[in-house]
Length: 261
Image (spheres, rainbow, N blue to C red):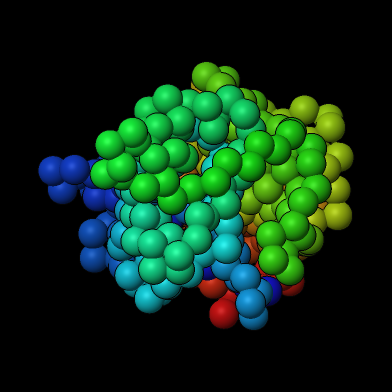
C-alpha cells in the first residue's frame, strides 16, 4: 500500500491567484502546490481523500480512471469544490462512487449540490455519488484498505482525520482531544496540517509548536507537514525542522513505513 500526496497546499495554493509566491522561492519546484489531498492505493483499491478544486489536475497527472471510494474531511470549499470531476469516472465505470464522511458534511454537500446524490425530475442529470455516513471513531473498509476515522477540532467546524494502518492523515486541524490522540497511538507515519506555521495564536490550523508536542506524545517515525501556505518555503522548512518532521510536496509517494519512494 502507498500514499501519494496529490497536493499539499493551503486553500490558496502556491502561487496564490495573481502569481503571489509570498516567501516561497518560485524556482523551487517543490514550492508549486495544489490544494491538500491524498490518494491511498493498494494493488486493487484506490481511495481518495478530499475533492479539491485541483482534482482534475490530480486525476490526469496519475491517469487515474477508477475510484473505489472517497473520504471527505469536512465541507469547506477548498476540500470539496472539485467533486464534479468524479462524474466522468462514475459514468465510465457505470457505477456510483461511494463517498464517506460525517452526516453534517454529507448533508452540506447535498444542500449545495443535490444532483450529486439523486437524479433531477427532468432526468437531465444522473447521480454519481452514494452517501456513506460515518461516525467520529469508526472502523470500516473500502476494498482491501482498512480505515479508521477520528475527530478533529477545526474551530469553525469538526473535521475528520483518517488512519490507514500505521499511517494517518490530518488536515484542517487546530486541536485534538485525548480520544483522538489515543486513536493515533502506534502510527509510524503522520501527514498533518501545519498551516499556522510560526503563529503564536492558533485559530483554525495547528502551528509547528503544537505539532512538535503531538509528535512527542505519538512518536511516529516520520511526520510530513501539509496544508503549506505561501509563507512556508520548502528549503526554509527543511532547514528549520528536525529530520523526523519534514515538509510534504506535491507528487510525493510514501509507503506504509513512511519511506519516500
